[in-house]
Length: 64
Image (cartoon, rainbow, N blue to C red; front, side, top):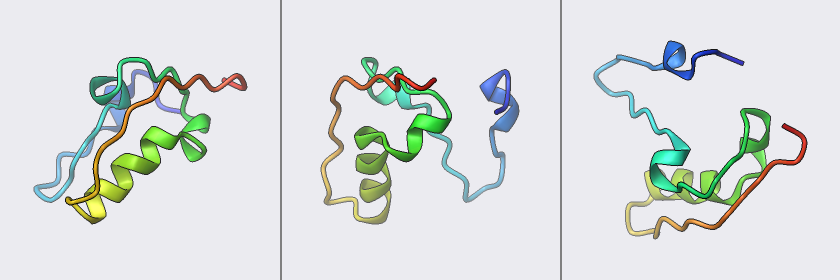
């Protein structure tokens, strides 16, 4: 885990940094919960296929 999260920001010209809470304010997942977060999956699918819609639903990783 990287604290603060901005320490892990990539500055490469082809990098896209996404803060999940900027896209979905009701997503309270932690670092480990991102593996099962449906909002993260939606953002990944959208990155691979821009025609895929970005969805947002409340999510809380109880293990965080």
